[in-house]
Image (cartoon, rainbow, N blue to C red; front, side):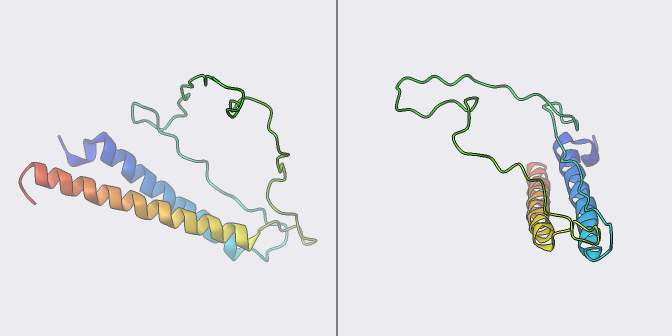
Length: 135
């Protein structure tokens, strides 16, 4: 069995490739922040199911039991606070809706997630080397 066939390493490689592509898209958003009528883009988040594939797997849910009236209500209850339903920032008169602050937050979060994936990949390879006695 090749190292490329291991599901965990394959999923980490796919995740790193996704972060690289997202970095490219976010960089385009930043570079076009002054382009008239430019709309920012982003990638759809990767979802891995329990078989290791890229598919949205329905998450199982457990019912919460409220044993006392002073306990917090379940998450399915009506929210107590109003939610901000505004998506993104307003469009400027030139038609551009890129917010540099929002894009830079996405870039830094993407960079941290990529660093975590590469660290996990490296540690997984080290564990495999240790297991076969090559480390």
